[in-house]
Image 1 (cartoon, one colour):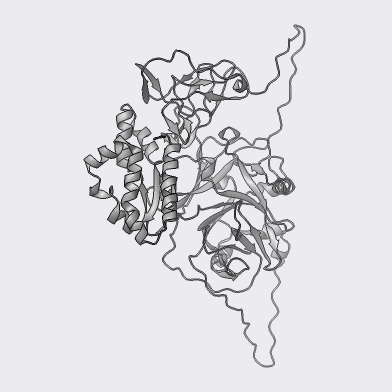
Image 2 (tube, rainbow, N blue to C red):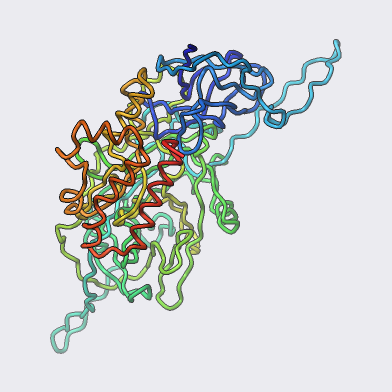
Length: 556
């Protein structure tokens, strides 16, 4: 019986390299789990390489987990890996043939070393220029655009404003100027030379308390737009240290954006070579490309308060998450609004911006809008990639977890802005990983139900992998296949809800997870039919559950 160990980002190779990418949704003390195909460096040769070989019966979204018995590096050293945690797995016997890197995966392209003449003096090369980025920390001096390695405040990167979309539209009210008394004229409008002297990009963002208070009232409004049913919802300014001119809007029916963070980097307008300027960003936008940055943000659900909050991340090229899509906002001549259509959106723009200054009626809070938790200081965390990391332990992101863009308004001197949007609300019968669906369920009357049940999956894993640590178990269970169903149906019809999931039932379901999925879903069909769902919708949901469980490797 051979004992192998699971591998994590930051684990070393026998030649002095280390694993640099992994699944950041499956973590141990903040460090990602490594899989076959993830990237690794070499201690003796430049470039990045891959992990080849994986544990035969342990999968993460179709990729085998990396292990010390089964995985090697594709670097020229054909290095093996040194585990840093003692989470183990067993094999009946030591493999006769160790994993070997295929020739076509062997190494990064590099020139063959040439013979050095003994009397040739060494050539000193100038360091390469920094890679221009959209945003970087001010703790990095001029000429350095490296990603940060320590927790730091978001203010080190730029300025931010937070907006929320109201849950329902309110009517537009026309602005009616007060009539002056007979024989009198309106007093002339006072000039504001201090504003007129400022360039557009200085007036575009406002950080003063007075202007922020005005914006908080003015932006909390609804404006007409030729989208869907002819209306758009204006975003309400709710926090942060900066507001923008004009108004940001979202299209309703259905509402796909609940929260938006808006961020810009003052360095873009200072002519530093470290930053991508507007011209270069516009070129990238025209190609529908992506721009490098050293910070990204996303909305997550705070574990303590249960409310949505903001988390920032340092992103280096090695993370594979250092680039953000760049898009040009387009003017809609019919409405006067500038529109951004998210890729794949066919029916309505995702967000809009209008420079209009007309008066609007402020929509009242309905009580249905979840109030996010906006900390006094938003922090930016490094994505851990080293052994012994003391970084906060929390689920780290994958590329699919971000919903962020760099937007350019085709107006002279307008600075490009970075926006990060909350994920769309979960839909009834939507199937996905538990942590994703639970994070998008917002006072919607839905429960997120594990199928098979979390208890059955835990028992199955414990039986098959008795040496698995609680941390690994937790990381796997939060990714379990789940479905969003009406709370009433879940509580009344589910055969695994609460006390109905008896020890006998858990054992039965753990013995055959595929049969358990069928049984768990069948139990709720009557209730879901009562809710009005069709056979076609139910069959699709059932098939989606099977496909996700198969993709995660629980059965074939």
